[in-house]
Image (cartoon, helix red, strand yellow):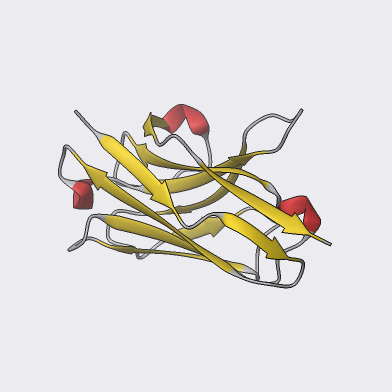
Length: 124
């Protein structure tokens, strides 16, 4: 059974930084692309970033491009999201997800395992 456990969320001032972590277990981590999605209150879940299984390909939502960086450490079964220059509109629950395939994807339908989420709150 695959488990994804996120950590690193919290309260930060606008302009600040946070680093989210997600540790996976249950199947061979390095075989699958990983992604981060987020959901703000009253809004649908949206794509944030994705990384291919070996880390060679990454994609970002336009809203976070240049501020967020996704990375992974296959030896630690972990994926990270470094978030800099945080804005009020970045506040949401952030979800780590594991894809059904090795190549990265922006679409939630391509992910079959999800973490429980970690809250990010940005104060202005």
